[in-house]
Length: 357
Image (cartoon, rainbow, N blue to C red; front, top):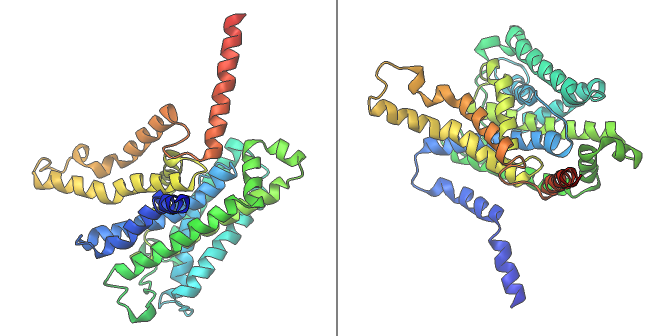
């Protein structure tokens, strides 16, 4: 009896329910447009999980994750478009983009991870802008504003990847599931515990024998590699690297909002944050703008009556409300929630002592 109850409890886990819904989604009678947008959400979930490793687990304020997203996309373009001699195909491009961006993250981290706090954040912000301007100005390599295209579809198993979104959707879902399993194992590993120790108190962790520099580099490498992986999938989905401005600072902020709103340090929370914010940006916003247009509420095209023009402000207001009223996020990690509770208890004890005296 107890075994049956335990088995039913495991089947009712939110992750399994969500996975079953995502697997069954493409067979439902829903327009393909929404399926393509859901594929984008899966890609951004991989990107946000990479930032969660850096920010949520290692405690590194990273404002340049979009740069590695773009590097992964352009590596894919260089390796696959017909105008270059390589044309390695999707599989090789996926591996090279992931490994290449991980190496780029390490190369950035070696000289900069000695910095802390705001200084490190400024360095990552500056790196993101350097990458964006380089992608725009190195036209002979990156194509500049013309981008690199066409990026071919995977073409596996004789399926029509270019027209039907379902094969690529399932591929992204499979990769996301593999990333979640990998990160769960990392979180429970010795390296994961070292990341959490560094985030909570770097000095104490160093005194306990943890090599802070090496542990931080590992976090940056994992986060950058996942960003490059997401960039490869993103470029393949679009069949182009897109304009370099697609990988600007605002993209990093949106992904950071997903992590903070969902819950820093929480895999489940990060996925919820992506579903809410990226889902609003890619699915709900076009629907609302379509309703406004259909109702002829905005015949003159005023920017004040377009939800897409207010998206960044809505993200900002959401972030402010979360930080103010639920700083641990919507679905916080148990470790971070315990930290907040301990902090609140210490503040309450200090206030009570001040009241007594």
